[in-house]
Amino acid sequence: MFFIILFVFSNVIFGQTDCNSAKEISVESLNKLKLEGNSNFFKIKKDSLFESLSLRGDFKKVTVFKSDNCSRLVVKSVFNNLGVYQPSVSQIDEGYCFCENCIVGLSKIKLSIDESVLIKVEGGSFIKASLVRIKKKISDEWYDKMYNKGDRIKLTNIMFIAGLSRFQANSFKDLNLLFQLLKGNTNLKIEIQGHVNGPKLKNKKAFQLLSENRAKAVLDFLVERGIKKSRLKSVGYGNSKMIFPNATTEFKMQFNRRVEILVL
Picture 1 (tube, helix red, strand yellow):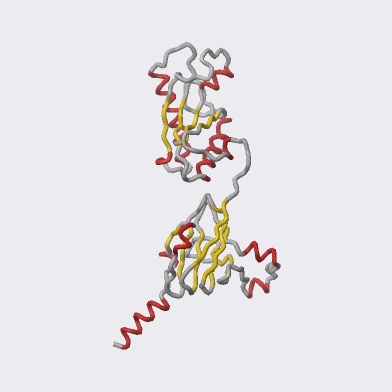
Picture 2 (cartoon, rainbow, N blue to C red):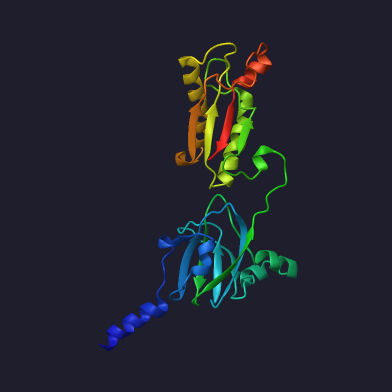
């Protein structure tokens, strides 16, 4: 009976979560954590809203790793329960920066929009996280703006070869900027609207199909680069919404062959 009680007691006090089974948590949920045992591994999900965070609590220390690869754990930094960076003995011996300004900077956990951040919390029962939001650039460029439902984005530089759904070479800059916009704003959902050139002509079936294929070409470009298809919708309008209904120059015709974005 004595050994059974000791076994249960040991599980409670010295229980350790294995790195490979680390729980993946959102930044906001850090303040809801209840720690158990001596060591707890967590993966903080990649985030597009917050650039960094600092941690305090009743824990002994928090270790931040350079990657979330459990097969090769490389320590990036260590914090005490006041959220202050503590260099290891080897880092001090190597002359690692230990000035006041350096400590302030290193006491923040940098977040990423590309990968999760692996941490190990030792001891304690709770964590208090202070979050720092990403500061958006002040810019008039369409790819730097914040968007709401119903907003429209006119991508005048995404152009197509006449009669085809193939991009012209100069289209890829805006296609990549659209990808970066969606990658950096994970809650953004869009409708991709395709248009064709057909001055003084009715919106025949061939025009409609071509406009749909052009919108889908943009959708496929984004999906191939990792944007979830559930965030995207594509539609075609044929030549029913031309910018220049009576276009006579190639310049104007190119602007009729276009893609527009509606924020959903």
